[in-house]
Image (cartoon, rainbow, N blue to C red; front, side, top):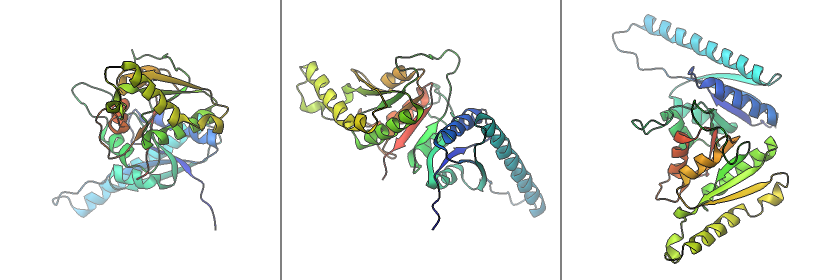
Length: 295
């Protein structure tokens, strides 16, 4: 019986964000000696009744040719970023989110372009990234570089940064973050914003020090054992009295990667990272990995 190697998967759509995603995915695949699969989903809209079959077929053929050209160009960019890389191409008809999630079945990680950055008038990230990070069966990386005016050198520049909240989802994020830091031969910063600690109601609200002690316990328990598994990764911990999104965004400026957990369909009442992951995707200036807890 043959064993299929996992792949690094990158979704392309012809937008300006493709180049950053392709380069990030190519280097990740090369680093891990895995194949890179480039996928473009050909979204075929419903054809109006007044359009003849011949015209519809011609339009579909043109769309298919453009899609093939798109993945060919993406392949060239990937091989330029990582010479010698094994690259596979795929054009899949269907709905973008559904097909990307299906394509990620055998992927170690799915990489997407940055989508819509934060805009006060548009609170949503690009809809594809938003939905894929909530449903993909593997970690999803939204690749990006700092825009003009964004900070490039924060406290953890050059490191992997991971958000911790004590949940099972953040434990998943910690596992992914340690592995990435080890492969990248860089160090790790674990950040816990303890204002939103789940058991905060159980401590004396009149004693701020008790909140900090409880937060320190959560951080220590979540990180327990990982330093022994990855002795090559130096770990720095940060306890922040504040909200998680600003803490993570500030800490991660200039970082190699920011990792957060997600419950997928979870809710957020000041403590779980489900909505935090989406907010971080809107605000962070570095590549963000969303490591979703398995259902």
